[in-house]
Image (cartoon, rainbow, N blue to C red; front, side, top):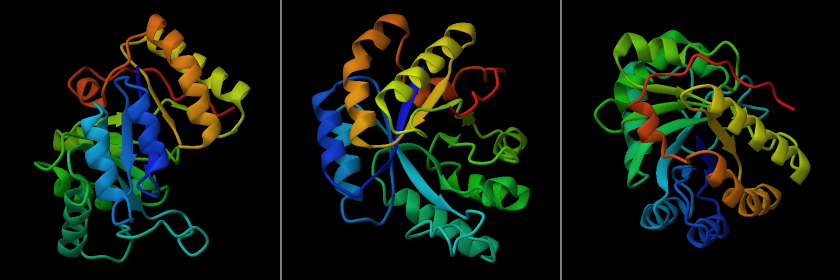
Length: 228
């Protein structure tokens, strides 16, 4: 089972948590923020697998701006691919990348092809956060021969310890029935505190893995777990 914590790069505190809790975890760092590069370097030194958390077009970018360096509709192919390359280069030691927001762009076959083509040769995989059921990322990745992983469980749609524990158990159960499962969370204090308490128990029930290992394995056919 792989656990990925998104949205790093905004402060140092989540990085310090990873440095205290040495498990084979994964962390996605937003590019072009004050602590982006420092976070990526410190996470890698702590044994955490680093991803670039690439901002992508949401359904309404005016309502929810995706952030610096966002990949948006209306960008031509050369400029879009150059923007993807800049974002990936901004996160040292990144082995893969995943979408920050992106519910609109991950559902667009042409734009996802450009994104994955730009990433090929720079990183090893794309983790689809599946912010929309209409995502085409896996299908495009299969067409290109580029590994695309999927998120199965969101840990903290409800930022409450009891709900987070239930989602962790759902992820372990999914991993026990299939080759592997991926859970995504965020650096909320409740999420990190719950993980700190639960990781010893989780490590006894399932093998925690880096995402790059899963990218080399056959994709599991099990569905995404419904949000709590």
